[in-house]
Image 1 (cartoon, helix red, strand yellow):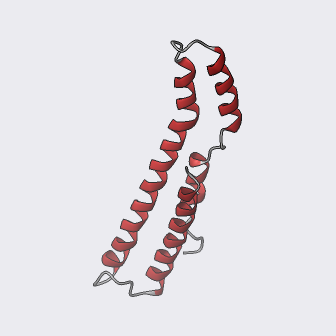
Image 2 (cartoon, helix red, strand yellow):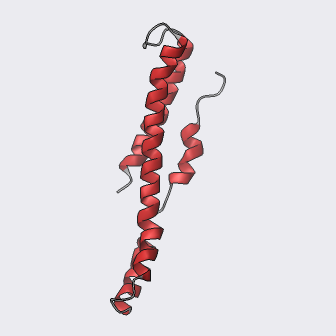
Image 3 (cartoon, one colour):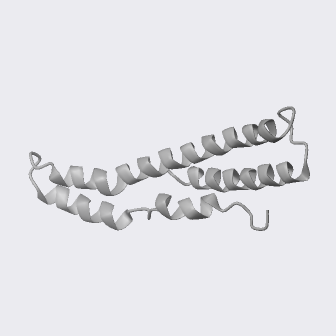
Length: 111
């Protein structure tokens, strides 16, 4: 227990994306210029913005669910009941809860 959990710090760059305002402006201008039957710009916009947001959302939700499950299992595995019994269990569960709180903050930022 010399170093705290840092799962979220490792995962955070994978779920980070910019707001895409430049992409929106550029592809909006392209969309206005192109005829309606041309749809590759819509597909590109989906890939560059929406798909990355979906991936970030699902990755973050999975992280939160996995940590919540692990918090329950740690106490059950090392103790006699689902409540943490030792200072080490409490430390690990609190560190995990901090990681989950950071992930939830990131989840709030995904529109």
